Length: 135
Image 1 (cartoon, one colour):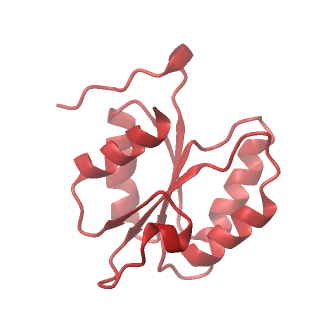
Image 2 (cartoon, rainbow, N blue to C red):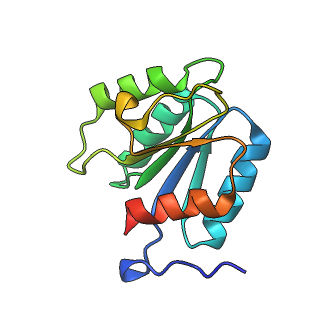
């Protein structure tokens, strides 16, 4: 069984999961919660931007964003561009991990993200990447 991560001052870092597949959102959110994170979910980019805007009014921001690239509505690349353009927080932009099923996945550096993980993936690998960004 996974051991929960210990975080400063007992505060659970927010991790936003943006994916149009509800099964992936549920599985990743469950794993994040079991590992000591506070997951939030969005089914596409505009929903994610709206959530970030709402939560930022409370002075809270995601520590990490897990992002699918291929989604209906606002896709992952458009979301990234809008996020970078609209970010007005005193906090730095959250780390972004792209989760994609693309056979020819782009390099993380070409997207300006910390990591690209290919579906199907092992939850342990995803959690390791999240831990590195929240350490």
